[in-house]
Length: 374
Image 1 (spheres, rainbow, N blue to C red):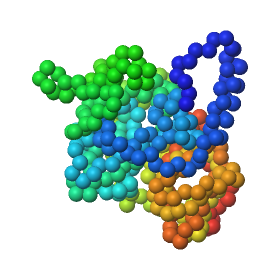
Image 2 (image 1 turned 45 degrees about the horizontal axis):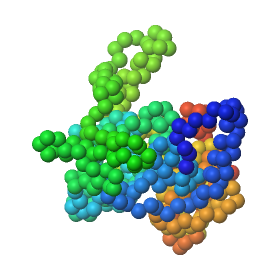
Image 3 (image 1 turned 90 degrees about the horizontal axis):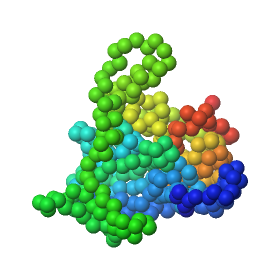
Image 4 (image 1 turned 180 degrees about the horizontal axis):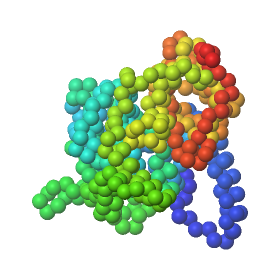
């Protein structure tokens, strides 16, 4: 685990850089590429797992798997469960329904989803989800939040607690003078804090003002006479997209593609007109006894095994996996998926689209899938 805000002044920066790089490389290489899921536990929001490869914060990376950007968590909403809490953050999450069906509430609008659909929540939107009252649902959230931490956009607001919240050891509820629950207190000593921290429900004023101004700006009316005008117009276009883009990508409406990497169905990619544009997310299906293509990309990748059993080969090293496991693929790693069972394999693959903005977002194909016909 990296140590936040540690001051080292006696060595020059270029020396620190090489030392820290070597330490990070050694740490990343020591971590497994296939992880079992961490179990869920009660929180102030509901039943959630811890983040599977560390929290969104940058100094919590390289804790379980060799990934810098990507982490994930699971949410389980049991039948007849208490209503979950609601929160808001600047990052635009993608929430994938693994089992069951349910609803998602975004700034007053309700959207419905079923198994294998994916929810796309616009930036800075109060959101809350629930499961079907009789069957519930399980949600998987692949996340690249550490990118937002480095940009100073990691802040999260709590707007509503779970209907029956659980306050873990080291925390306690805060009630107003009339006994209404208005937040919770993180007690002195937790994570080394020297005085209590209060988390009060509601918005942070500066962020609220900034995003309400964006949303209320309306359509761009003037000419675009120079480069600066173009970026003023961009703010209006971004707000307009969030107003009109789809909030649910329906799995049954997406098409399978026969590609050099194998049989793929895209749920999210940057060219789609949706509010969550910062990831690639797609299904990969592999027939019994077969394999995917072999490829390599600069972006790291996180894969959830939805169905089946098999193994990966990463730069010549084999990693076995089964249903429910998470496969971590470090950046610039040659990799291929193999189905070692008599049943089909289905994978959900996710990686950040941020690499596109750096000019390193493409794929290098090294071997075609056996079923591909050029």
